Image (cartoon, rainbow, N blue to C red; front, side, top):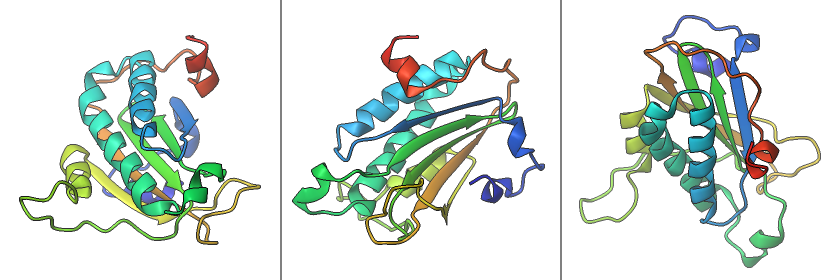
Length: 180
C-alpha cells in the first residue's frame, strides 16, 4: 500500500512508520462523522492536533467518495460486510490518510458548475493535501469486493513541518471505544 506514496519525496522505509491506526466504517453516511472523530482522537494522541482541520476535511471527502461511489447502491448494502476502512499512518515528516474500498473504479476529478452542491471533493483533497492518488489493492482475506475486483486505496499525503515524538502505543478502534 505504501509504494505509490514515494512521489517526489525522499524514500521512506515502510517499517519506519512511527504510528498507525485503522478503523472499519459502516456503509452509512453517518460513518463520515465517525471517521472525523477517529481522526481527531488519533491526531491528538500523536500530538498532531494542529493538523486536524486539513486532515479531517480530506478524510471526510475520501470517505464520502468511497460511500457514494464504491459501494453497491442497492438496499442490500446495509446487510453486506463492506470493506471500507480508514487508515492513518505517521512518519516523522509525513502523515498519510488512506481509504480502502471494495471497488476497482478509480476516482475521477470532475469539474462541477458553481451552482452544484457536489463534485468538488477531489479538488478539495488536492488543495488541502500535499499529494494524493490511488492504486488497486487486494481486499483483506475473507472479504469480497462489490464488483468482484481487488479493491482500491485512495490516499492523501501531508508533509509535517514539525517533528513530533512517536506515540507511546498504537491507536486502535478498540482503544478509542474504551476511551483509552
